[in-house]
Length: 209
Image 1: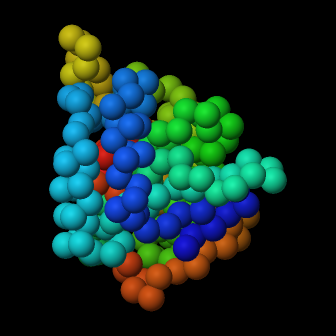
Image 2: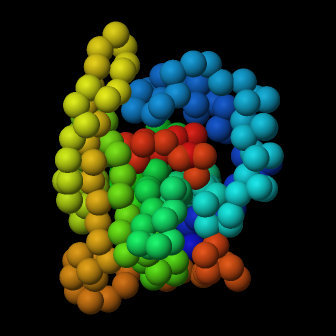
């Protein structure tokens, strides 16, 4: 398990499927995801079964969080995907499905935790992401974590009858270390396979993964 003060990341289990179906049929949750059609339980079940054929590090993780004094509850998904082991890079994706945890810093803490895991445990050198221009809240989170803007794919996304730009951002291992004062952040408990989220644009994330 990968753990910080208020967030922990664990493997996805079959019992998580009903929550995914609920979240990914909520228009507010999917507004910045690639999902644009109603999602059935069997869609998620089929996706879950497909995880077994993926490398351990390429599987999305369940995000669990807790308020002070409260229990751990699943609030979303996060993960790294599209690994390139020659240049040691991957792409990041996240979504927070439990809206009661929005605007409370959990997305930022989860992003920091996953980026730290990518650099420290998986020994990546670069983590990139795509985010829709319609999601300024996510852009702000990524900037806080240390991602920098690389480019813009003009009108590369279509939603609600309109074309939108897709922003490209990334963070390098050297930048992360400087931002952390040369130290790594929260503790992680790495899996036995050190190289080990269906992931959507980082603007939103898994299933998205």
